[in-house]
Length: 398
Picture (cartoon, rainbow, N blue to C red):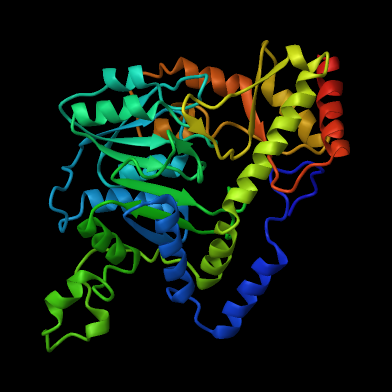
């Protein structure tokens, strides 16, 4: 952990989480066993998905979704250079699986009030080559899913939901991650639940599920519906028949045990974070200096959020990097809003990812906004007052 007085995340592990992990280590069954299968089943039932598979990270879940889409065992596989729409405000491993799968990312701008994809810009970018949307639900919020699903249906597009920052958020009483053909979730340390590392991929089609299962584990047939196809092969060892391409993206049983245990507490932790958010915002708005300096993002219509962090935005122009440096020196850990406009990252130029860099809203958000932690334990009044005082002293001297 770090030495920040106000970190992005407090120690996320309860004594019971730790005991569950120790029990797994003593069992000597460390991968793809009972804890993983139980977690997958509970996750599926809770969010009402069709199929869920645990993996070692949310990034791996994104990779598996796109590798499935181009897989030769898929009934309708995407062709090379098919266009995939993705918001310019994105995380690197939401983007790279598109490129690694020989598909072409098409960037669109964001809505600066929701931090999520600009649906007007999205529709403008659709061409005959457009086959899918990589949607990123940012910091526990989302776009207008009703309208997005209308566009998906109108143009017959596949939807992949990167829900790594939004586990537990609902739109119109339906969990994010259940709208598209595929969705990804992350259980990294600072997320809504933490398994240290870990993730989940969900899908709606049984054949996709079987393909992903093989891709997760080296491309072998063991434990998949493809196993029966090769059961009469006398030459090959039945446990090690490799019929597909593959990776080793399996989770550990330790991560699964902790993830399962924390997932049972998801609603309680979500409510606690939402309560802390309300109290922090109230304290900022009551401050004479901060109320006219900083604004807070509100959830989109029909959204019941599961906040990932507390995003803030300046009303007036400030040197953001300078302020963030001062905050961190005072003990407040900060992060930018994802990676900002990704087309301004060095890798975008190296890999020639765009022709024109014209994403004004993504730029504006990167230059005016950031987020701080939203801890699960209830914050006492003294800690909130200390946080407000740190911000006040910094902006008093601006």
